[in-house]
Image 1 (tube, rainbow, N blue to C red):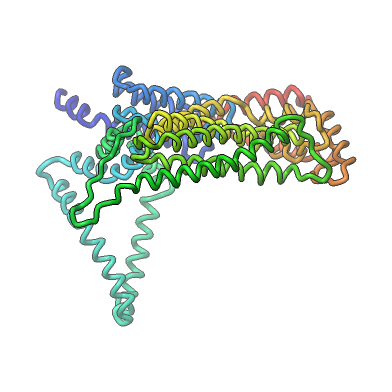
Image 2: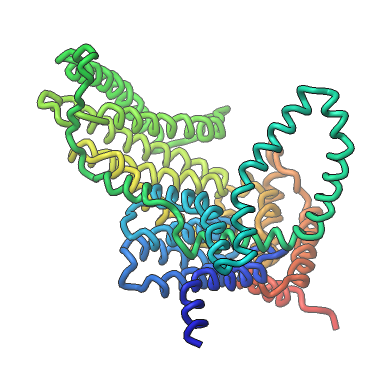
Length: 518
């Protein structure tokens, strides 16, 4: 009994991984995403937290765990597209941060995840070898299998090269290869079925989540990074000519000239935008609001991102410690501040477009992206002012992005967009076709407000340029009924693993709006 208990303890992780893979298989094989992802995330988080211990979890791991659980719950609550993505990413980040308490940032945590899964296959082979009893025929056979793997691979490579290079050798071996290929194909079809391959994938996923296999180089690399910049004194080899003493000063002068020019240029742009976009903006006759927002917005966002890259490049090294770099720093801070003003102008462009054409995913995405850009500009300002490192920028902005994305999962954006557009003050410019492109969650909302949709259609029919497909109430109603029928069929065929509260709410609301005929 003691021997069995010791054997189980030594192989606890393997047993847990195997059981978890079985659960993974039951939850996900031939299933769509729903309650299964939420349950799996809770299972992994609970297992890892229990194995490591709550007190042993570093604060970054706790934050990642909180975000993961929120996103996992929102998978069931809202059934949105973004929630499963963030839940999976959060789960990967949490396990990496939990297994390596020295990690502090999400970019390095992702590096840890990738290196862990790269190292997992070799660790799995070693683990299988440990399971084989010592001094047994199976142990000897396993050793020979491992020893012969590389020679067999080399044999296959050279065999193929000789076949290509020698036609007679190719002809001589053609029959043998065909027979071997047929035999291997038959064996593979019998052993590696689709379900078997999926279970191997489940083992791979669960193994990488439950145990660290990666070497220490990722955490050691991050531990060498610091939020504060350090002055680097680079010694050149004696056989290279020494760098000129004024190289840093020449770079400073170029930077000052560049920042003077771009600050002056951006000042003109900002003055125009403040006067034109900020106050009393009106759409002139024949003016392309679409070009103004779509192309203009992305061009300005790209200019802000390019500005961030330029400032990071200028203050990448010892320029931060240049005693004569006062004006370079001042001009850089001014440019960062001006880019923040430009960010407000871009937001207002998008807001004017929403005021004219209503909400859509991309328009909300622009607002979210601009919020993250503003965070990036603030951290860039602090980097220049306080001599912070590039690692500081990556760490803070990655965590800010994760927090924002987790926050996005808590909102039912489809219903939010439809509600806003149904009551929009400019009904003749709302994209009616987009209602039918939304998720099934909006079906009850559309059925309850068909009168508002018909009013928007009537306004569209009076437009000089008609750009929507559905302009007749009956055609829209037929398309809506078809969408409802597809939803009803999907829900009726759902397994419990695919269940979401969002679907249940929708089905209940539709049943209340369309009671079954006795």
